[in-house]
Image 1 (cartoon, rainbow, N blue to C red):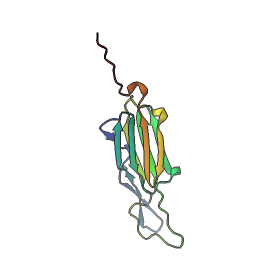
Image 2 (image 1 turned 180 degrees about the vertical axis):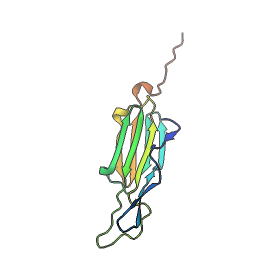
Image 3 (image 1 turned 135 degrees about the vertical axis):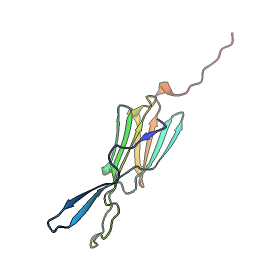
Image 4 (image 1 turned 120 degrees about the vertical axis):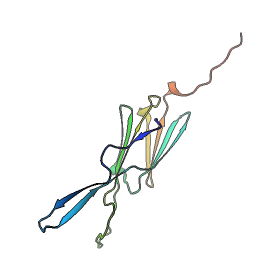
Length: 139
């Protein structure tokens, strides 16, 4: 895994304005957030924790392609029945984050778990890339 991370290249915090028939203007906000991550590495591989509050499993997409790991998700903020939303700073938050993976990792064996708004990805090293002890002979 690289020291640097690359955010998804989509505009963050961009907004569009549309006119409606009553000559009023309404703003629709499209917000993309980079989730906070913690990354731990040991001789077996990498464990990545990404904070994705309010994201159900159905709205989570984790992809690996050409050495790039991409996490995209959309949080679901339910509105209780009988109540009307007065104000929302982020109506439908969309999370996006991308990482470059070293070829030392076995992307075919990635394990992903989502629990209590935290995504845990375990990315093992390839057997050939794991550190090994070299026996030394005397003679």
